[in-house]
Image 1 (cartoon, rainbow, N blue to C red):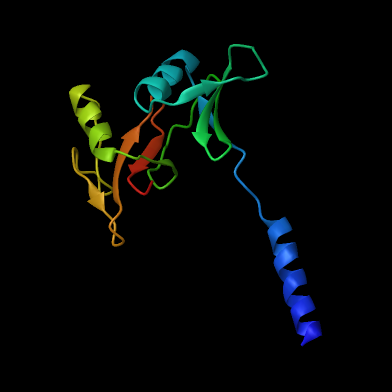
Image 2: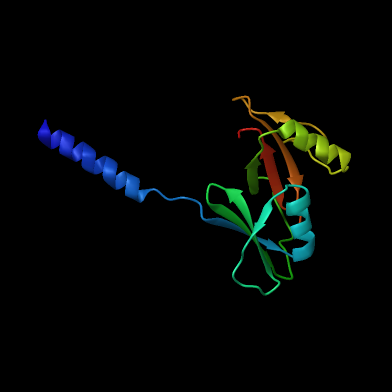
Length: 143
């Protein structure tokens, strides 16, 4: 019994050390100012300190100690799939959708129907929007 308990504790301790956390997500953008305006105005992200100070980077707090890094490079991918997307959960998705509507900012459900909301089998509601470079973002209420 003592051996079993020791093995169990050792396993639990080593699995705790093996865990990782998201540090940041980097997104390639073609126009930093335009993208900053989108992420600040549409998503209300808070800009945080970035070390490069070169006019090609912007960093945003996305919660849980993680950051979104926007990095300006001239070209962008020409084919962007909705399957590859960033996902942000909102505390008040209804207010967010109202704001999108008031700003006439387009959103759609997973199949691509404009102005519609997808409800997953687990009850989480989700919409999809695109940033200035066409990258897809899922916004859901699984906050």
